[in-house]
Amino acid sequence: MNRKYGPHLYRFKHALLLALLGLIHAHTQARSLSEIIKSKELRVCVVAYHPDFIRAEPENCRGNCKFSGLVFEEIQVFSKFLGPQIQAKFLRLDWDEQFFNKNSEVVRNGIYTPELLASGKCDVYPNNLTRNEWRLKKLDIIYLFPSRMMAIVNKSKQKEYKNLHDLAGKIAAVDKDTSYHTWLGEQNQTGFKENPVKIQIISTHESFVAVDSGKVDFTLADSDLAISATQHELKNSSVSFPVGPTEEIGWGFRKQDRDLQAAAQRFFEDQKERENSEFNQLWKKHFGINLIKFIALVKSTP
Image (tube, rainbow, N blue to C red):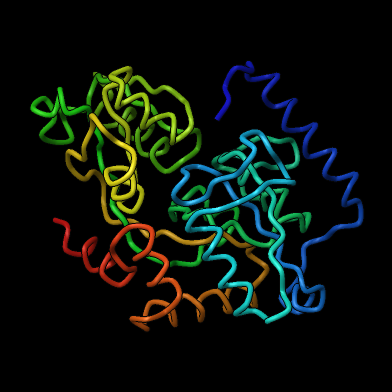
């Protein structure tokens, strides 16, 4: 994520973008499943957090992007499940925008519907969101698969990192308002309080680059992302050990959209039950392991 802007300019930038989108969709409102089917359009808001999951071209595009990657292909399958005539319409976001209120701010302890969901500009966030307390105050996350956060370090420092305590006092790179950012903040208030981790806020993809080049000591990634990165991206770094408990990962929906959530739940259950399902084939294509086997692998991680 581009952080060349100061905090006030950054908020202004996103407030302006939301205002412009509001002018374009002045009469847009949150929609039910029946309205989505009637309109033949599923409004999908995605974050290009890693090329293997979703890539957006050109790099700084917003609404007029060319998308590719696993998440993009998964959404195509889900759209057809909802109805053969339904087309996915994509809008690209920065990660923390998913949780913005009307003032383009993330208030972690606040109870509100994120503005992009409340306004109907987004029907779904398919960005593999970790279910945690502060997010569930704002939206519902329909469970797709379990995961563990993994510490990724440069191979030259591998011997220095054997367990959680070895992360204290080090420099970490993570994206803003991700589950990794949340977890590190919690550790800095508890176990790392006397020797907190120094957190640099950059995009997930940039975090991998920073670790691989030795600019930071470590980053964190969910299991699926860690598998992808070690296969396709990391040259000088590797997974060191898991941190935190097993977590639940899924897609985000407006709390009131019960019918759409129920449809997503049925869809996910069907995809995970059938060995030859579309999701299993897509995971096998992208990561060399299907979704069923990935879930079994995570559950077996001590």
